[in-house]
Amino acid sequence: MKLFSFHNIKENAGKRVEHSTLFSAVFFSLFLCLLILPIIIFIVYPILLLFFKAFQPDNPVQHFRDIVIRYKTAFSHSIESSFLSAVLSTVLAFFLAYGIRTTGKWQKRIALILLSMSMVSPPIISSLSFITLYGRRGLISYRLLGLSFDPYHQWGVVLMQSIHFACMNTLIFTNALEAFDGKLYDSGRDLGADAVSVLKDILLPLLSPAILASFFLSFLRGLSDFGTPIIIGGRYSTLATEIYLQIIGFSDFAKAAAMNILLLFPAFISFLLYRLSMKKADERNKGQKEKTGLKLDQKHWMKYPIQLLLFIFLLFQALQYASIFLYGFLRFNKKQIFFTLENMDSLFHYNISTMGLSLFLAFSASVLGSFFAFLLAYLMERKMKRGKKLLDFALSVPSLLPGTCFGLAYILAFNKAPLKLTGTLWIMFFSLFFRQMPIGSRLASTALSQSPKSLELAARDLGARPSMVFLQIILPGILPSFFSSVYIQFTQGLTTAGAIIFLISAKYKVLVYTLFDAINRGDYAVASLIAGIMIWLSLAFASLLGMVEKLFCKKEVRR
Image (tube, rainbow, N blue to C red; front, side, top):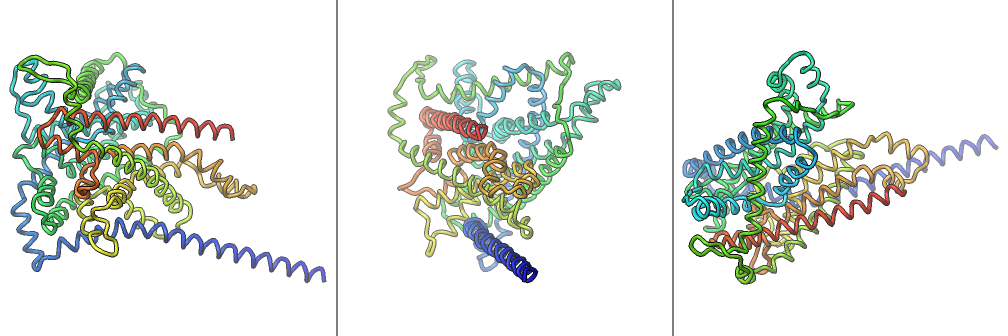
C-alpha cells in the first residue's frame, strides 16, 4: 500500500507539473500574440499599404520609369549629399574623438556636453543657427565682418549635415575608444612603431566597426533629412524635399509613395550594413575581458593639430547654440545691435500652446514605448525560440524608413474605418510610439545580453520567486538602459519633424511645426526662441530623469 501510494503521489505530481508547464506555454503564447498584434497593425500593415499604393497605377512599371526620369536629379542629389556628409562627418568625428581622449577631465566634460546638445536639437535648428550666424545678414558674416555670404547651395547642405552628424558620430567613436584594448596600442609603441603606423595598422582596423556604423548611420540620416535642404539648399533639392512638396503642395499620395519606395532601397542597404557593423562591434567587445581604454601619446606632434581642430569645432558649436538662445532677444538697426523683448510678443502670436501637446506626446510615447520595447525584448531574448529574427526585423523597419515615408504610410493606413485616426491625437501618438521603438529594443537587447541568463536560472533553482528574480537580478541590470531609452525617445519625439509633419491637423499641432512655420516665414528671431524652448525642455527633462534614476538606484542598493 505504501508503494502504491508513493507511485500515485509521484504520478499526480508529474501531472501537475505537466499541467503547469502547459498552462505557462499557453499563457505565454497568448501574451506574446497580444504584444505582436500592435506591431502588425502599426508597423507591418502601413508599410505594406505604402507598397500597394506605389504600385496601384494601371502601369506601375511606366509609372516608376516616369518618376525615375523626372526626379533622377533629386535622387542623385540625395545620394551625393548623403555620401559626402557621411564621409566628412565620419572623418571629422574620428579626429574629434581622438582629440577628446588627449584632453583633461574638465575639457572632456565640456566637449561631451556640447556634443550631446545635438541629441536635443534636430538638423533644422542647426540650419537656423547657421543662417543667423553666417547667412546674408548673419551676425558674424555680415554684422561683424561686413560680408554677404550665400550659404544656400549644395555645399551649405553638406556642411550643415556633416557638422550635425559629426556630434553623434563623435560619441560613437568615444565609446569605441573607451572600450578599446589599450595594451595593443602600447605593444605597438613599445616595439618601435611611430604614432602614424600604429594609427594605420592597429587603431583603424580595430575601429572599423565603429567607422562603418558611423558612416552608414550618417548616410541613412542624410537620406531622410528634408529640413536642411529646404532651409539651406536653395535650388538644390533632394528626393526627401520633393516628397514633402508632393504631399504638402499637391496631395499626390501615389506619386509620393512611389518616390518613397525609390528612396527606400539605398536606405535599406545602408541600414543592413549599419546593423552588421554594430553586430561586429558587439562581438568584438564581448571578447575583451578587460577594457583598459586607449591611452594616447601626450607629447606627440599629432596631438596639437587635432586639439586645435577640436577647439575650433567646439567653438563653432558654442557659437551655434549661443546664437539660438540670444538671437531671439536682439534687434538690429543698421550696424547697431540692441537687446529687446519685442520678439517675445511676436512669439505669442504663434500657436505656442503646441508646447503642452508636444510635451504630452513626447513623454507618454517615450515612457510607454520604452516599457513596451523592454518587455518585448525580454520575451524575445529569454522566452522565444522561433521567429525571433523575423520579429526583430519588423521592429527595426521604422529605423530604416525615412520619416516622410513613415508618416505617409500612416496617412494611407488610418484615413478610413475601422481605424480612422487621421485628424486625431492618436495618429501622432502611435507614430512617435512605433517610430522610436527600435531605440528601446536595441538598448534592451544590449542590457539583457550583459545580464547572463544563468543568474536567473540559479536564483530560481534556489527557490526565488519570479518577482524576486525580476526585482533583484533583472531590474538592476536594465534600469540604466531603460532611463536612457526614455530620454532618447523623449528628445526624438520632441524634435522629430519628418514622421509627424504630415499627421498634424488644425486642431492638433506640435511645437516643431510652429518652429518650421516661423522659419518658412523668415521670422528667425521667433524661430530662435522656439528652438531655445525645445532645448531647455529637453535639458530639464534630462535633469528630472537623472534625479529619478538616482532615487531608483538608491532603493536598489538598499534592497
